[in-house]
Length: 320
Image: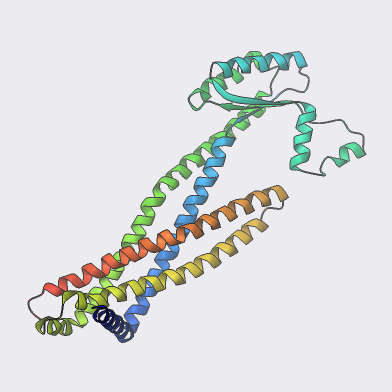
């Protein structure tokens, strides 16, 4: 029984190989088209994750930067911070962080090491002003803005800078909205590409089966099992999909490497380069994890497309 199964499978592979060689042109065109589709699948998968990662970090950093006026007293600052504590207690804001002049300079030196050396060299005083970063509740944002723009706070905080900060926050929120849409649409786009690939394999196998219509009909007349007739066509469709997948994987890996290297060189700041390198590394890691899953999906869709394509020829009563 095992020998028969082995022989049966061997014949199917041989028939599939012969069919691949006999239909070189249409198979080559199919592989090229599938490769392009699968490259889009890889790019969409990586871009969806990258968008999700950036989105996750942006959502945590969408805060309001409030700078105090240069001549404000420490007592006025303390009174303002006390109001923020009360708002946090009432859950009108999530949290806030206060930076004194010295702490603001320390943060500046962390982000831009060596940039403040000239202050000490020329004996200049600290030009930075105290500030507070406020992380608002999503549904309390406009109430917080009304509070910060109140006239009584004009002598304490820099309301002109706050307006500019508010405009930047608006742009970030618009980006987050667009990124959320892309993130949610990513799975649908991937499914769309996979369906297209399945349809392309269906069309290719249907065309090949049409060319071998007489052979299929004769095999049916001599009593060949449907599984034997169907097998070579299904294997051929899977081979086409697998070949295109491996080629697309190589091309996509090369494109990702070149893209991330070019993008990294656009950031002169070491901290930005480090952040971008970290994102790129995470994208490539997830991409490598997803390869196996995407490959299985592609093979499943290839099997479905090939199976459906040959199935209609197995039930024809006449030769066309």
